[in-house]
Image 1 (cartoon, rainbow, N blue to C red):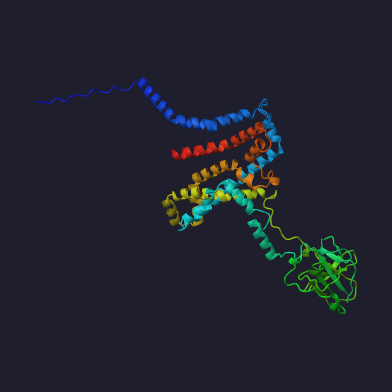
Image 2: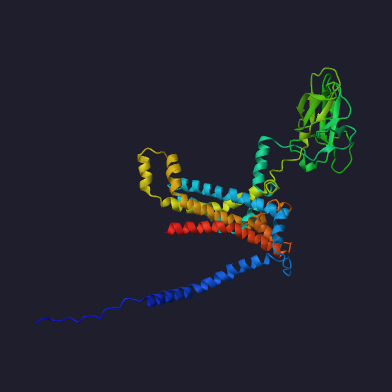
Length: 455
């Protein structure tokens, strides 16, 4: 006897109408799930963008429609043109430099034991706010060597190799003995002959600034010797008052280390140096073995030159590169970590095969590593381009007020025009729209790159 198995009813094929209903239901569910995010994006991004575009077509108060007049004023304004030029410099220099530095650091630290610790230290500035970083670098770049680290190093290096003037504030008491030369030094009013002595008194130097090696000033008369011109450079000041001007008093100190020159007329209206000497601890100096003739004693300008004050890092010429350096300090870790992650994902078989074929490390880097890292490098580069266009904090904080216009960028100009005293929201909105139009191509390129890498 044969068993009869029950037959299941066959499922009817979905009709086109049911398929459309299913797709419609899936779209509805997807929209419902995405609606909160879309609402948030629309409120925080969409509405401000649309409002800025509309606002850019009205005047400063927002009550009068002016069309594209704000855009005309934008390109006619010298401050905005400066901001556009500086923004272009930022875009051309900083992303490429950061990507290159990040690539080099990622490659150099790829196979060392302390790579993680090094990357942590380099990446740490990313955890610092731009406000704190700006304040820090404002101090680093300070013109005062006692506060600015860079200028402290620059001044120390300069004084080590070039020396510094010993008495920058010193000057003669009057013009009876010494008068100022065109070069900034001083020379004797009267001529001197072999056997004469001169007393060169200086003032304007606080007693506390007299070198510790200074001794009581030598009496010029005691230095006289036939055939020599002798003298004393001394501080012509007696603490508590008294003393005779332009004369060496017992309480006065000599000034050691002063460069003294003996000059003579060359017959054509100029002078030439016959001899040079340095004053002793008691201020005395001597020029020996001189032929008969008429001479003048000169104190060169280098004795009184103001001390080297360092580099004006925040001056008009260097303020933009200085701010760029601060930006590099912050973002180098970002570029290095992303490129390092891409470097770790490279196929080791390709690199080993190239080494077996005889490729050296430079050839590996140039012909294999960099081409394979091109997608990562492009993502890092485009991301940095977008961030560079929006730079605001560092420029606003680091650049001092008098040179802020020299370092101006579009984001800062937008704020200054709208809220920083300009109170012209129409022009500020126009700058914001231009900035958005400049950022959009980079954003589109980045999105396409992400989609391509994900497919």
